[in-house]
Length: 463
Image 1: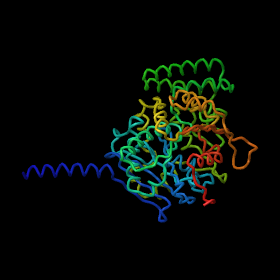
Image 2: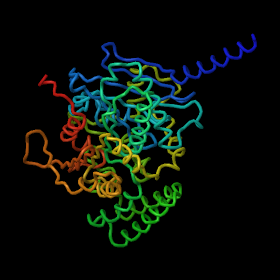
Image 3: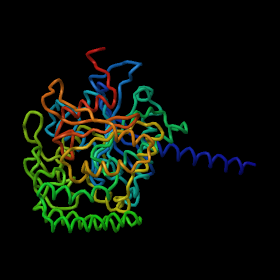
Image 4: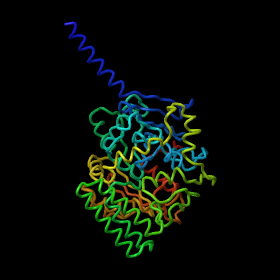
């Protein structure tokens, strides 16, 4: 009897320890409570880093709750939301650590996460613990949300909008599906306001098929270049259809090189420019290379213009210098982006896998889904986005496609069209003119207006 009781006690102890271990977290923040950050051990020896900003514009209106935006960066290698999205796109400070006039904090609280593990300040104690699929990343993020939300009534009252950019869109839709299932099962106390996909890598085959025709129409490649690029794009389409995703990734690398060479170095993030000549970039150390590597270099080795026109320092130096010092809880042996190299190699089998079905699932469940795309983006072109949208099985698609678009302007100035929007039921599509891959950087004014519309952000002045 005693041995049986001891066995039961030990079993309960093991279960208790495993539950506690899964929810291990470290939290810190500013004295005034406007910022919080921390780690959640989403799996044993796998640590996700998060950073939450509370908006100074917050309006307490029970009939129209103040929203929270979760930002998921692209990549997937080194796609640090805490670094790139926060300091170079939409956070309260730029990389000079000066205030950003166009911060999305004006419209919502902002939650940045370095995901998947190994990205940014997130880390694993064993490299074998890196995620290999979008679903595994979504499971980790869902675990993090459970830790942050289930014991926090303030967050529970704030609807969460998952915004994403580039490869982050694949993370966003898989997280949306995962979080919704957890909510329905009573495991996650969270209001899912919607999912917003900015220039998102949802259907790789549809995107690569557009690269050659777009560049030919723009006189950036000739007929020979078009023939070569179309041949490789069609090969990718076949490989994806056959589920040969790693083969497709290899062909995709080859296609990027062909596009780059035949166009004399077009900027994959703005097809009107040469690589590295984006207006927000002043210098670049490298240009040619894999898209995920180029994405990292674009942000981490370029100097950017801040709102006041000053150039920004190297982001890595900022993150591993003053930011790491401010946060205090980053382990001594962890450097921002130090494990980035393990992320893409682990996810290579999922990189070219489409996630259109997940978009359909969210729409069918009644979740608001928004797409916004920059006009001159090549890597995730608007033409490619429209192609995969037309493959949706959503029952409102035919009506949506037949509706007229509404023009968008910046503020009260209606002399210059900044974009278009089309909406039907719970589906929204924004065409952002004059923007490349990084919409919040290229068109901050109309982007901020769009965010306010998506999140139904209450107006502080009217309260």
